[in-house]
Image 1: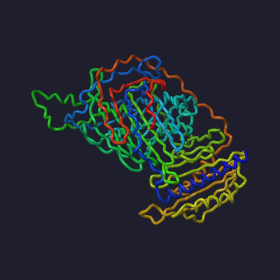
Image 2: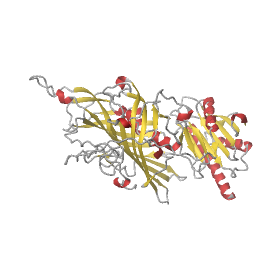
Image 3: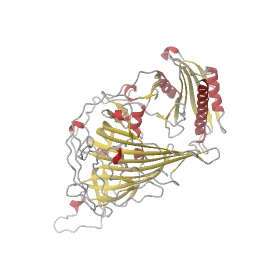
Image 4: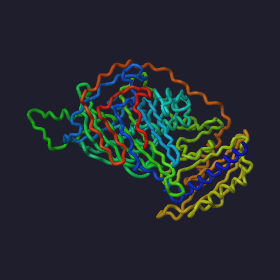
Length: 623
């Protein structure tokens, strides 16, 4: 036991020293050149089959899962790529909660997301994992504004169904994302790629796993309207996608690059469906915070085409077929197919590829604008505002040795957690290095003897000074014990250090500045905690936030309670769905080089059933 403890302690010191170097190199050089995300070279992402049982809305077949409603027949196709000379401006307008107009009101969203991951190292067998999520939610616009009510700044989301599998094995833990079923939340748009999520009365507080799933693994459907062109476009026209709309599609912050949208064709209405559908393709490559991503997506915008009435001129007049017709058409994005491929390659000491990680992401999403009244969540009164109780996320140690709370804009960052005791949180800053909080927990009985204030301070200072040239200059800081009366039984020693560094080449400023605070905490049960934090922002504001997080740190917390299950809701009786028209086909989307293709061999099923994993075709293996 003693040798194991010593080895773990040595490993933790190595991780901390390496983290200091990585963060400091980021200060001096910006994005690290050693981490090179690639999208070419290896096999491209597999195509998305739009006809597979993906979204999960009940189509009336026996054994299918709730919430059921009937599947309308799939529309046929008639020259979807033909340019009629008309120019369309597609508009999504939402209905305010207190109005009964023709805008989009409550709607139901169902999606399946598949993540196929592979991790490869030389001389070792690849590690492969497949994660599949099937989710059904009801969303209700709560705050609507902007030009013609096209913007949703807040909505209420009620989770109806959440099913997860990992490598074909269902996840049944109610403390993970599955526990979101039956819960209702307020989502506030604060201008970030993901919304702020507030728990509403009757729902449980979000833990780290649930928040990550709800915030980062779901598409914000109203924001997809930003993918539509603000100008009139004809079939074959292309336009650049605004950055905020691309971020909503990808669920992360874009550092560089743009996506392009193309109006590829029209699917006309049929005898049973009065809606036309515009097919819009989104493709390109962008650099996210830590990834270069190749994207290929397909949208379907459903609308009632007014052009059919314009084709009949009054009396014996003639139609001027040479003049484009500018048409403003309200409707909604009702279908999204997304393929995304990321590859990261890290070199070893010799410069060769030492590690390759690949992720293939597929999303198949459908929206229905007709929702049974019993499924529509009520609007809270008064409007909720963010508080620590309803917005901070609970991070719980997998072994339940400790927990703490933190603001939503901090995310767990990749770190060497082989010892299971290091936690790294980071808050993205577009204009600099992310704000960091690094927690190293020493359980009771395994606290190193040298873990005392003087060696701790010396180690932190030496860590910064050991950064390779041009290095980091450590200024005159402050240190000392904090008042015990303010810390609820914890003894806290704090070290504050001002840092300066040489910024990126050709930067306007002559020197960069940052602030680091480190904490050595003796916990009430005899355990110890080391914390290192860093920001390029306001030191006072950052320090207060870090210490608020540290005050929430608890050891040996009570066992977590399972979320309360929502009362069952009456479901409508499903009706059998007519078979699709035989012989119809959708032309495939031609992929760009090395970009994941989106393909459709026949009309997409409008409401496929939520079935077990065995009904979903397995993707080809990663080569």
